[in-house]
Length: 138
Image 1 (cartoon, rainbow, N blue to C red):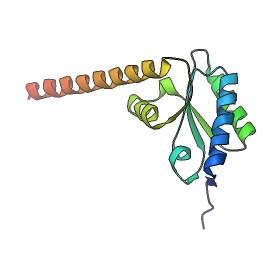
Image 2 (image 1 turned 45 degrees about the vertical axis):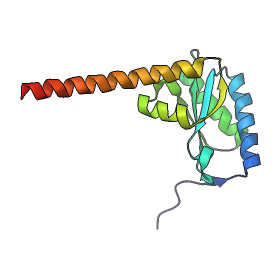
Image 3 (image 1 turned 90 degrees about the horizontal axis):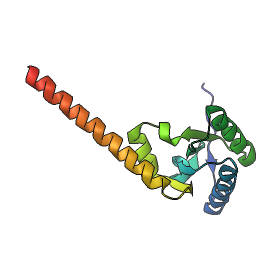
Image 4 (image 1 turned 120 degrees about the vertical axis):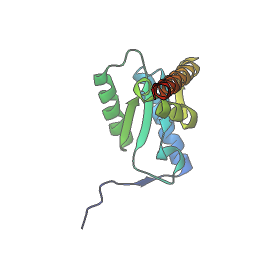
């Protein structure tokens, strides 16, 4: 028999709003410039953890770890914090389009969205160029 590896949580809509408000407060205290909640917490009845993508020019890896610990201690829920600018472009775009923006330094969301679109277009162009080169060699 295998043990259950993860605990799942359920919350009312009102409880989730309170969690989002508390997240917003804590993230602001940590100097986060852009924070987006994504994953099952945003759409599913049950969730395993709260996924948060954050961006701050000043935040180090240690700061990111500290933020995750602080959030878990404050909320009493598992939290997964990811640096938004270091996510793969396609996944980052998904977070930007489907997540809930908690905090935003004015204009930063649009800037990261456009940067992500540019990265994806460059990757697509590079892939097409490589396919054409490979085809011409044959």
